[in-house]
Each structure stands twice: as structure tokens, then as C-alpha cells.
Amino acid sequence: MTLYGWIILILSVGGTTGCLIGCFLRVIREHNKADRIHAPTDLDPRKTDL
Amino acid sequence: MKPKKKDGWGSSIGIILAVTGSAVGLGNFLRFPGLAAKYDGGAFLIPYFLALLFLGLPIAWSEWAMGRMGGQHGFNSCPGIFRSLWKNRLAPYFGVLGLIVPVIIYMYYLWIESWCLGYAWKFLTGQMNLGTEPSPYSTHFTSFVGMTADGSFLTNGLSLPVMSLLACIVINFFFIYRGLSRGIEKVCLWGMPLLVLCALIVLLRVLTLGTPDPSHPERNVLAGLAYMWDVRGGFTGLLRSLQNAEMWMAAASQIFFSLSVGFGVIINYSSYLKKKDDIALSSTTAVAGNEFCEVSLGGLITIPAAFIFLGAAGTTGGTFGLGFQTLPLVFAHMPAGQLFGFLWFFLLFIAALTSSLSMLQPAIAFMEEGLDLDRRGSVTLLGFITLMGTGLVVWFTHDLAALDAMDFWVGSFSIFLLATIQTLIYGWVLGIQRGREELDRGALLSIPKMFDFVIRYISPVYLLSVFGLWIHQKGGESLTAIQTNPSVRITLIFILSVILLFLLLIARAVRVWQTREKTS
Image 1 (cartoon, chains in turn orange, purple):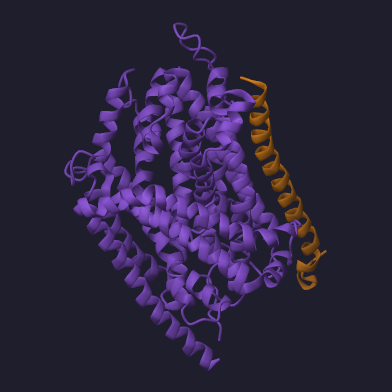
Image 2 (cartoon, one colour):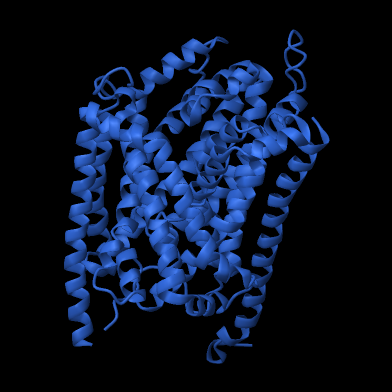
């Protein structure tokens, strides 16, 4: 395979894979962050028996 | 009073996987690699990624934005969403495309899905060992789908192909009936990782094949990768390839069909989101997921595998030829081919299932909000309509005439029309300013300002140019088929009947919505 072929292969496969991983990590991070923010407000003090 | 929303998504990951599942299908693993091999390998990727940036991504973003906006007005179906965004009495009737496109595609896609299931079963049970010559695989496919004569698919009674189709009908309706979060979302949450896992196992096998046939040392992994990815003829060859207008059109069509934009599904799915839910990052992630399956998995598996065992001649044959005739032959040559053949067709089945599950939801949403039917009623009515269509497709099997006619007029032509209408509504009716506000609300990703210009001017022109070239190239052949083939004419009459039925239902739904608005 020529150099052009390797460049296109690495950029295409690396680009799409990197983009997916980057986006997904961000989705998961935001998902977890949202859980942390909402968790305390979701607690009903009347139902806690601490 | 606004119509009540009856369903919703369980999580943001759920909708991302559901949209990705809807987009990822046979085209990712068969059509894309076939086109790249046909159009000079690596050179194809340049127009392909440009089309992604200027056509695919902008239309996907705008579709998500319009869907969530329509959902805030209480509508989940295309006619309702168009009516809420465009104050024109004809607006809901343009939305008929957002209903009939997925419903009619479902009718023939279900059959293709059953081929994947049937082939997976045959590999699992060792029934696909047909030798190492190509002709038995062609004969097997012809017989499996009943291509020799109309009606031959059904005349063998409860054969494996018929049983596979019945299994697919039951599986689809079971999960569709369960609803968005308990049915479609659950299947995608499990199905998409399973699909990627199967693909990674097959990919590992392909990349470790080395030079399996010592009598053909030129057929090795590197040569297979080169056939798919290399630029033939160096820099001069690249420049020559880029002058091929047909390649630009093929690349744009592939992006367009692959992302499921203009399909009526994304606009419906995003309408179930809440007002401040993110759509920018979710839509981009769904697009990235589709591109990963297409470029990184499909691009590394299909053509290299076919080339390693069959040489350049094995990389042609179109989607069905490559998928159901060439690749089974490739697995016959491959060490442990029975296992990898099963994994391959099982992953194609999962890809097809996650797509087909999405196709009835837009019409179900319409029947629930416009005709006041409950889920059971709408699923039953749609089941009856789609079974009639599937019956037509599996009866007129000679040269797959009915399937091809539906695929051309609905699976290609109508999708272009709907995408054009959506792009014009977003860029020119809704307006860039309101569209941008909608996209930015709750956004976890900043979409570049340049997108506003692209969606208003570049995307419609790009879309209409590709549409025009595509009609020029394929239209004549399809018009000739109408004149010469009675099966095609019957199929078209059926398509027009379904359109008419849905237009009448929309007229009734509009009256229901007007009455609700007057009383509220």
C-alpha cells in the first residue's frame, strides 16, 4: 500500500473512531454529572430514616 | 388542549443508540465498501467526508432540532410537527412522506432482514457448506429468495426462508408493541454493543488471515486493505479520480442514505426529548456511531476479506451480490468460516433489526396523536397494512421486481424529497435564527456558526444537485420498468394507495387537532 493509502486509512479509521470515542465519553460524563446534580434534590427528607 | 405525549426515552444514551441503530444497516457493511472499491478506493473517501460535513451532519442537526421543537408543541409525527412549525394549511400533508417512507421501506426491509437471519441460521447449523466454487452460492441465493418466478418464495410451504420471515415479523411486532423505552430502546441498548462486538471479532479474523492461499501470494491482508483504501495511480490518479462526477454523486448518496436523514425517524425520535435536553452532542454522537460502523468496521472487513480469497473479481456484485453470494463463498474459504459466517450474518441481522424497529414508530405516533388510537390499535392497523405490502414483495419475487420498485420510488426518491422539504422548512420557513436557538438550548456541544450558512444555502443546493444527477442516472431505467413490467405497475399502484390512505388519515387528524385547539 502506498503512503497515500496509509494516510487515508489512518485518517478515516482514526478520525471516525476517535470522534465516536470522544463524543461517547462526553455523553457519559454529562450523564454522570447530571445524576450527581439531580440526586440530592430527588431525596425526600420525609422518607429518610437516617 | 395539547395532545398528551404517551411515550418517551429512558436515557440520553438510549436515544443515541436508537438513532444509531436506525441508521446502521446493511448499507454500512455492504454498500459503502462496495462503492469505495468501485470508485478507486481511497479517492472515494474525499467526496464522502465532504458530503458528511456539508450534507449529512447539517441535515441531521436540523432534523433533531425540528423534532424536539415539534415535540414541545405536543406533536411526535411528521404531519403534526410540520403543521406546528409551518403555518400553512398544506404543511401537514407534506408530512405524509415522513409516514409512508418508513412504513413502506419496512415492508421490504423486513424480508431482507429475514435473509440475514436465515443465512445466520444456516451457518450456525452447518448448512452453508456449498463448496469453494461461486455458482452454488448464486444458485442458493436465487432459490432462497425465489428469484426464478413470481410466487416461488411461498410455494415451498414452511421452508427456512418463510420461517425466517415469520420469525422477523413476530420479533419486530413484539418489540414495537412494547413501546419506545421498553422495546426499541432496550433492543438498541443490547443490540448495538453486540453488533460492534461481532464485527470486531470478524475484523480480528480478517486482519490476521495473512496469505491464506500460498498459490496466490498476491492475495494477502495488505493487498486487500490496499484495494479498499489505496489511491490508485498515486497523486495523478487521485486528481483524475476526483474529476469523476459520478463518484461525487455516489459518495453524497451513500452519506445521505446511510445516516437515515429524510427518513421520518430522527424527527420522530427527537420529538420525545424534553425542552432542555441536549440535541447537539446526541446527534453528533449518533452520526459518529454510524460512521464508525461504516468506515472503521465495514471498510476494514468486507472488501479486504473478499479480495484475500477471490481477488479483485470478488469485490463486485452490488449490495445483495456481495452480501449474499460473495461473502458466504469467502467464509467457505476461511479457517473456522462456519463460526465467522454465523457471526457476520448475525451482526447483519442485528443491524437490520435495529433499523426495522424504528420504521413503524413515526406512523404509530401519528395514529396515537391524530386518530386517538392506543398503541395496540395503531400497531394492529399498521401490522395489517405492512403485512399486505410484505406479501406483495414476497409474491413478486421474479428479479426482485417489487422490492426494487419500492426501493427506488420510496427508499430513494421519496427520501430525497422529504430531506429537501425538511431542509427548506428549517432554513427558510422556521428561519436560521429560531433554528439556531433551538439547537443551542441545552447543547453540550457548540455547533459552529458556519452551519447556519451551510444549512440555508449549501445543503439545499448540494441536495438538489445530487437529486438531479441521480434522477438523470437512474430515472430512465425505472420509468422503462413501469412500462414493461406489470409487477412494477402493481407495486406502484399499491404505493399510491398507501399514500392516499395516509393523506385521508392526515385530513382527519387535522380536523381532530383543530377541534382540540378550539376547545382549549
